Length: 90
Image (cartoon, rainbow, N blue to C red; front, side, top):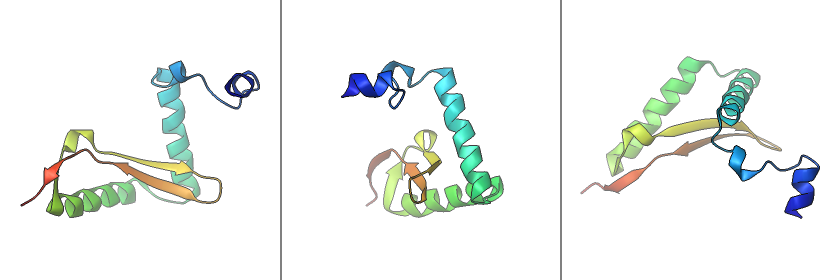
């Protein structure tokens, strides 16, 4: 089915992921979702800082690798966090 999905434009080839166009599209989607849910950038930054602070109490994280994304889902918008964890705090 993958061939037909790509042919009909329902699925992007995996080699597109990581391209500048793909990154630009993702950034635009984040901006559009933030605008739609009326979430100012300052609030998004505050959410990031608070989540990192809380998670850092319990596990040691890699701050440079922390990523937050706001994406449009089928029924709900989603805030996802990708936080690289080094180890649990003792």
